[in-house]
Length: 318
Image 1 (cartoon, rainbow, N blue to C red):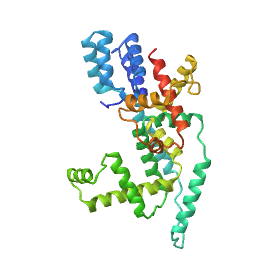
Image 2 (image 1 turned 45 degrees about the vertical axis):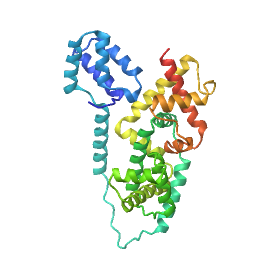
Image 3 (image 1 turned 120 degrees about the horizontal axis):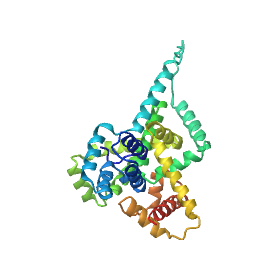
Image 4 (image 1 turned 90 degrees about the vertical axis):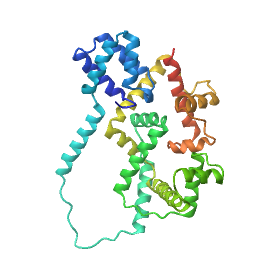
């Protein structure tokens, strides 16, 4: 079973278990409540099965549910993605064949520059609607997941554009500096020891850093990828789950009568809770680096996001 299970899958699976008389109404609702109250990165069937023992005190029921899940677990996200791909394939079959030209069009760096400039200006002008923005903000709270969807959006952009971007020496040095910071390789000795452990020499490391620098250059050329990230979330069903969480958070905060603007929680407490308790890491030395990683330009937006999440977490415990 997956390490982390989407809420939409859990809801559909528990409903099916109820319909097939594996769970009664109370058992279904109890497990659903446990799933909804669990932080989404920690939500799993293993956790729910453990909770069922504590809730119902019936190991036989838990064993029966576990066996049933092996064959009957519902994966709505996968079904939605497959259905969308099938529809896209059907639509594609109806497209007319592009006419062939009698002349050869030579793509040059001049055209690259023109198209990059146009794409960047168009992307900057395009704003997200309310739901899309809430989904993107919710995704930003999980920086690793945000990076994965950013990479997917970037790959899609690369496929749609002919990219030929040179890498500068300064770009390679910047990539190496970031690599050393992420791996805490402050000294030359630490770097050399690390290289020995991963079996690379300096030439190989330089090649790797050139690749990283090239990706960074392509990211800059791609411009604003927010819409692309949201599109990738729509493709695999992640959009639905994140929107559910964002709407649930907004509803609970409205009922409790609290909001980020009026919060008296101080930044040190927020940073300690978010990076330490939620992400299980340390507060970064440069907050700007973290903001860049999740596509934010200013600290105000970041503090608003983590304040809302902190208030939501606090209200759930009351």
